[in-house]
Picture 1 (cartoon, rainbow, N blue to C red):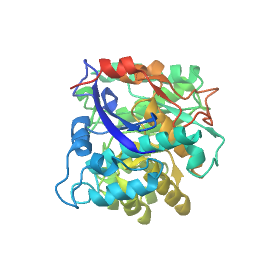
Picture 2 (cartoon, rainbow, N blue to C red):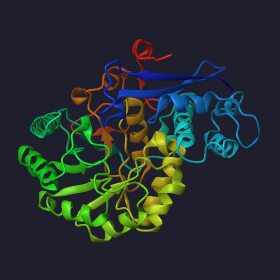
Picture 3 (spheres, one colour):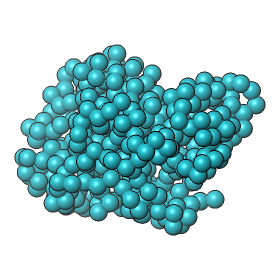
Length: 390
């Protein structure tokens, strides 16, 4: 079996908001075709136009080859070998950032393709399941351009997630800092604490709560002061409290914080994760399968986290394709506790609702171990056409 064609689809909802803290409004979906008629699908969470360029651009020398030209004619079942080929061949233009994100979409599609070729779900090919069920948390980003509306909608969605059977929720409290949602800027950390308390009161003590503040605080002492304002609400972790490159700050915050510190959604490759893990600058490791370099690299990160005794909670703010990849990763990751899950019933993005006609089910708050070959999801071709941007 040989790879014959790679297609890239840039997708965008027509009513997107550029001031929203949500990358679920666009997507880059790839299809890898073979001479035997099998097709693998993948996606990545980055600017889809530049990722497409990274995949389709031709190379002019052996240090800057194009990703597509390195894959055409190759055996798609040699997934890890192809990962190394792409990483080495694109080293001058790739290595980190965009290059790894583009590779992530292709690697995800290659695992899906290999699973379909062998008639096995991806987790079996990745080493076998260590977890027989996967626990998703409902990731909740509300609307609202003022604090009262934002809080009310977030509380309503937390209650709805509990009614849908989710055992855990993550509150996207993007109200401060450079990535505040809908340009909502709340400078007083006590308001963040009030939002967290309102949600805890509404859903009760039995539901796990995580809090994502989207890089809100400038330094670790400011972050610690704010976190201590809602420590008594039994928070599982605080996500991305500091800028991504403040490794020293993360190390100090992890040591001082009464709440677990989680990060990693923007990190590309195991090498960037190693910088934080080697400095004891994380409690919870959050690889995004598409951004970190696909299932090949995400599994390496998960194994390194195991060796460090750290929890793994994959990040995913995209479609059912990425959610499925996170679930397969969770199945083979010894220390994975949850995966991020954007419920269709609570999603504002029509892409999340429409892109896949078949996705992994949530049953009584859990995702059963997938049994279908590959990732186990099916693209809605009509939606792929409707949201495609030429």
